[in-house]
Length: 253
Image (tube, rainbow, N blue to C red):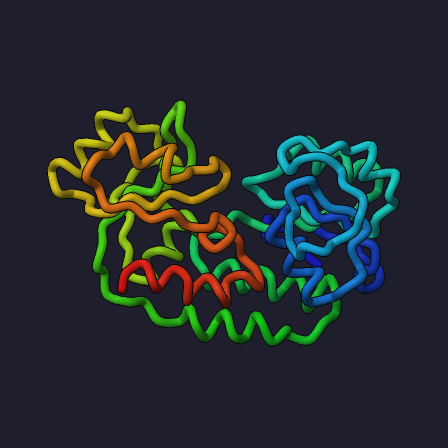
């Protein structure tokens, strides 16, 4: 088996004892293959009743605790997890499947399909088939949005991001989609000017990784139309994509 980055994943049999370092993959594999997770990160909040040992955060997991769990597979992501942690796990004989940070919904679903059918030897789950169907269409653009994911400093979605493609498919364009960076760091004055000049007419504020609220974000853009969205619906690739389409579509109605 080969992961998304072209690395060999030396599994001799279907994965049965897995540690996931990626919250969205945690939900995807637990829903699709219940009971095979041996550990997850502190940020793996779904399924809400998941009861497994926690091994720290995605960026800085406790690798020693992962090794103590003796998994037959560890799930990682090229954007969320550090290469040095992946290499240490592999050096200790642990197979690691690294999922690429997908730039589109179809790419993410295709990657998850490979993981579930190859590493887990599963049939294609119903939620994945449904997600592919509901996300197949791209709606006409009705809004042009700025999508911050952090403040102090301000960081926004730029080019080739999964969240940007999710919004594009429900009719919300990203004004930074053509930026050189995937996560630009514009000055606040530049963000405000996007709205003043008419380049943007919607502010999309997720609750992760920075937890934007009605009291923390909108006050900086007076008079601007804004929406608060679940970060899980915007950036997670898994079963949540099915419900995410309906939730995000309501934003443009």
